[in-house]
Length: 122
Image 1 (tube, rainbow, N blue to C red):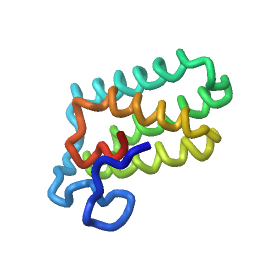
Image 2: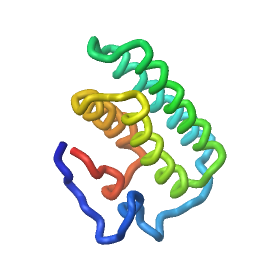
Image 3: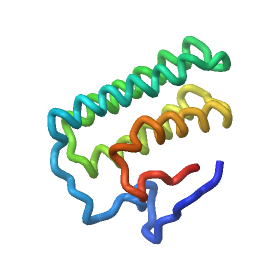
Image 4: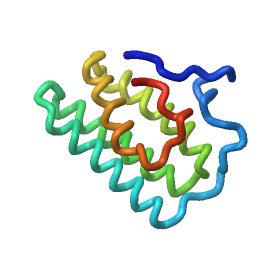
């Protein structure tokens, strides 16, 4: 894992610009978030090194992230997505290879949504 961007601000959400719009997502954006979540699930389900239990937990966590997109604004969702992804890696006991796969799938699926500050890992 290579850190490609480090923020001068402290904390896990330090890369989220304080001026970033925290408005609610639009209906088309919510639909696209849901599609991106499904893309991540599909990508991970195609791997042979992830167990059914891990996939189920990952799916539940990603569904939580999708649901959160309907309740919180953009900035809040980005911060919660960092937390959900981090907890998913720990809770599902993902090894470094699977953790990298989750980050890669997330980066690919959400490239339409993120600014340069969101992509911490490359």
